[in-house]
Image 1 (cartoon, one colour):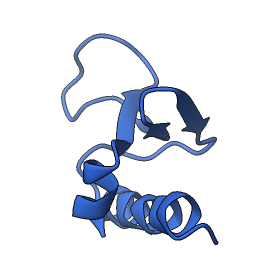
Image 2 (cartoon, rainbow, N blue to C red):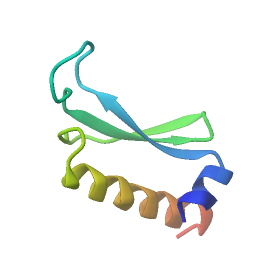
Image 3 (cartoon, rainbow, N blue to C red):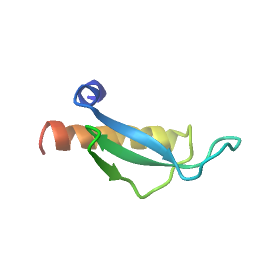
Length: 72
């Protein structure tokens, strides 16, 4: 599923809520980059390197796959 998204140039991108360095990293928001043209921005923040973030990235790829590739 991820490989199909990547092939179609659809990526889930982590965007830190602040610039700079912090031990453990700043929280991030997830965006879906659709072929470099459209970005679907998330509205929730997630702690970097957390299980919750990993799960949400997987969920975002599932959403992108169903919406943009399968057309559902």
